[in-house]
Amino acid sequence: MASNMQLPPLLLLIVLLPAVASRAPARTPAFDENYVPAWGADGYHLVNQRTKIRLAMDKNSGAGFASKLSYGSGFFHMRIKVPGGYTAGVVTAFYLTSEPDSGNHDEVDFEFLGNVDGKPITLQTNVFVNGHGRREQSLHLWFNPAADFHDYKILWNPYQLVYALRGRNADTGAEEPDGARAGVRVPGEADARPGEPVGRLRLATDGGKTKIDWNRAPFTAGFHGFSIHACGSNSSTPCNSPDRWWNANKYRSLTAEQRAAYQNVKKTYMIYDYCADKDRFKNGKVPAECSYN
Image 1 (cartoon, helix red, strand yellow):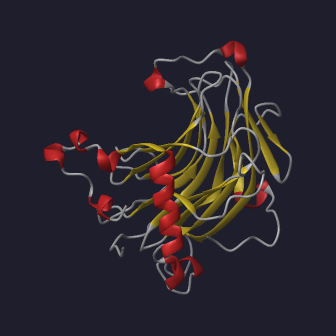
Image 2 (cartoon, one colour):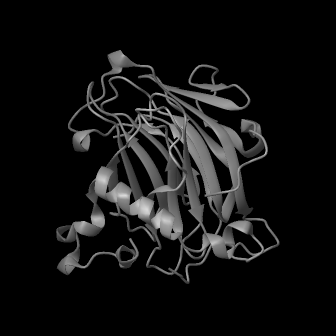
């Protein structure tokens, strides 16, 4: 699964807005260590509780926060509780995106698509490389992402790009094993330009057909566990150095157990996979990374 992908800096953003396998940290990082408010820091739309952040969106405003640095590789972790109840038209996202976000940008997305009462929230992943996206995979999760905080992680190194998530078993309350992968992708293009992980709430249900009901506002999302183990853009050590723990041999491919978990997620919970949708692509030729997935 090796790739000659270059590793430019990435910046991490977590935002809330309306819109048309790892090393466990020794402690819970405070928000101010790695992040700063981006907008909505009025004490209501963005509430800083030191190790937790609450973002609220209503008809008047949203809120967001961004990482202090840009990054070129690493391991990014966030615990997220998405809005519950009637959330049609609302999207909560945690993603890496290039900065400035214009032209041929790069992006790696976790997106939680809200829904009407009684229907499940959909987790959708997507990747943009050199301005080209259309790499969506969608799942109905085996846990309720609005019921509690759950772990969402992105591993990005020269060898692979891995989404990881961990939830609670809905029947027993026990923790699901870390390693149920939402996606594994190695971009086919050579370059991945500067970007930043981002999270947000925006409008999109049924392709935008179901509109947001502002009478249900405010929509609130919680974030904590602001852990970043990554190579900053100002680092003197190359971001693809084997001395970085996330570039070590054990993080260069999935284990057999992890790959089996990923395949089980695809078989059991995935409702859309761009790699299986050949009609979307010219001459039915799907992106190169589909051969790895």
